[in-house]
Every structure is written in C-alpha cells, then in structure tokens.
Amino acid sequence: MSDVGVDESLLKSVAVQVATDAAGLVREAWEGMAAGRSVAVGTKSGDTDVVTAVDHESERLVRDRLAALRPGEPVLGEEGGGAAGDGVTWVVDPIDGTVNFLYGLPWFAVSVAAQAGGVSVAGAVVEPATGRVWSAARGQGAYLDGRRLAVSEPTRLDLTLVGTGFAYSPSRRTRQSKFAASLLGRVRDIRRNGAASLDLCAVAAGWLDAYVEHGLHRWDWAAGALIAAEAGAAVSLPGSAPELGDDATYAAAPSIAEPLRQVLADCGAAEV
Image (cartoon, rainbow, N blue to C red):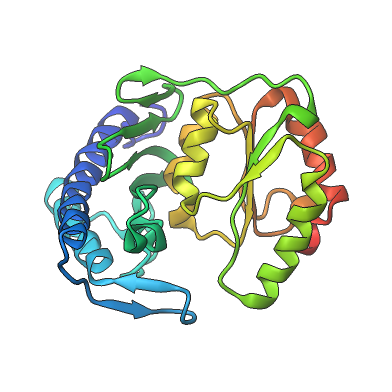
C-alpha cells in the first residue's frame, strides 16, 4: 500500500473481477451476432463513430459491480460519463474496439482501471473473444494470464514495429495518414489494430515495440498504459510530451524510446 487508503493489489483484483464479468456479457453478445442475432447500433461524433447496445449494457454491469464492491467510489465511463473524485476513481471502457466487435474481428476488450489523483494504480484489460486477462498494479509488474510481461528490446529503429490508430474526424485522419506515411520509411512497419488498450498491452508483451496515438480519452489508456509501464515501457500520456502533440499517448521499449520519439517529432507528430 503506497498511498493512504490505496491498496493496489486489492484494486487490481477488483478490476480483474469486474472486467471479466463484463467480458462475459460482451462475449455472449458477440457469439449471438455470429449466430445471426442483431444488436442495436447508434452513432456518437459521426457516422463512423459507433456505439452499440452492448457497450451500454457492459458499462451498466461494470457500474453495478463496482457499486457493490467499492461503494461510493466514482466511475468515469465512456458511455455514462462521470468525474474524478478525491480518492479512487474507476475509469471504464466497456468495449474498446467497438467497430472490431461489430464486424466480428476479435480484437476488442473491456478495460477497467483504478486511478488515484489522476494516476492509474491498478487495472485490467480482458478480451471477450479469447478470455485473455491483462493486468497490473503500480509497482508490482504486469501480467497476461498470470505470466509476467516484459517489453521487447529492439536494437535499431528500422527494426521497430510501431502501433498506431486514427481518429474519426476525416480532417484529422488525413493528417494522421500523412504522419504514418512519413514514419513508414523509418521503421520496420506500422500496425493499426483498432483498440488502444490492447495495443498498449501488446507493447507490454513485446508484440509491438512501440505505440503512439493522438486523441485518446482517459478510458482508452487508463489500464493499458499502466500495464505497458509495469512491463518496462517508457510511457508518455496526453499533456506530457509536447514534441509529440498535446494529446499524444506514447509507449515504447526503452532501447528505442528516445530515438523513436525524435523520429516521431521529425515526422510531424505534433501537427497531427
């Protein structure tokens, strides 16, 4: 316990339990869709920015479970909103990768994190399609299904596999595509998987050497960034790396973190 009233191990256990429960609900809906059952779909910022009834159901389940297990602690969720409190605040993405979920692509997750003072201290990212559980508590390492994670150790930038993502805004997506095209000639390759929490977990596992994305919300990175950091990644969150842009989220293996940061800046990351 490193802060008064904050038990990271307990908070991690709660995050894993609640995210796993919600992932079960999401998996059942996903399998139903594969069997031909329909799911109600709406939009948010634009026609390409979708939200499903399952997103809402998953968040309601998470809020109900947290209310029972951690009564009185506020929840900030992608669909239901909310605000941070003075103590522990739970940050929830009920389905990260909703478009993937809707299309049947099995790269989506439920993300639940506990923050204290705006800093993530425990979190879990659970994949409904596979049942894999990613988790971390501050100062205690990061794990995938009980196996401790460690980042990769690329020796050169041109051997670095970088993950990224694109915004829903057409104008910003155009800028991001130019940035990605500039970066492609400097690294091994780029991956765009469509779920920020899982991309950050992929850095933790060494499946990606680095990840950078602009415009993420707190619920997108709250659990995944902690998992990456606890696996040894160098992590910068929105507002902390102006050379990459005020709203950039960045995680990288330490062996290439600084030179890659410079290349990203040279490629116009701050202009995205």
